[in-house]
Image (cartoon, rainbow over all chains, first blue to last red; front, side):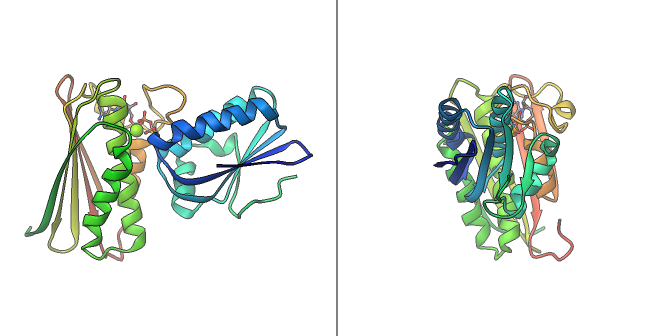
Length: 108
Length: 145
Ligand SMILES: Nc1ncnc2c1ncn2[C@@H]1O[C@H](COP(=O)(O)OP(=O)(O)OP(=O)(O)O)[C@@H](O)[C@H]1O
Ligand SMILES: [Mg+2]
């Protein structure tokens, strides 16, 4: 995972590789540590470099967006591939999280 | 239905095997010349079923997961994922989208994903005895989901 911060309070987490129940545990730790450390105003989860995900990816987004919302930080997801977007859509997360289809969308 | 090829796999319910199991089924399925799309769909569905064995069926214990896949004439692939864990009391309820018994890191979408990425999903379960999930996917069909 690559972590990028911007002066406007945006934290971008660029996820890499496969997201399943096994790999999500470590990703969760890294992401939550970054959230606590940077306390961003906006969290961007960039899926451009994710080669596989199952519903664990949805759980990951749900979990992080809830934590972010606890201190009024908005969450956005970008770079999703077609199948992954279909999976995300099943969750109804779209009412809580902004989805951008393109890579690394400028969100402010 | 004539069986053209088959494979069997037994693995312990360790999370590191989630990636191995879906890749093994994908490698077997690739022999039938599926589209990239079909292969990806099946891989995702298998990942859901195997993860459920690890997360739910055996929870904090370690048990056996049996996976067998078979290819039939006409490009029909069936994958059976079987555990001997806690079982499911109310299958219909468990299969409802967003229903989960496992807290906030799980979305309750596993069965919904299996259903939408395969052509047929069958779940058999008995509390205390285990669960068997059978996924069927039609390959190389223009009308496939
Ligand atoms: N193999 C199994 N053994 C025992 N219980 C199971 C099994 N598979 C599923 N379940 C039960 O069915 C529920 C729904 O499963 P499903 O895969 O749809 O969602 P989930 O695993 O809870 O969340 P997600 O798959 O989105 O991470 C689970 O919460 C669990 O209670
Ligand atoms: Mg599941």
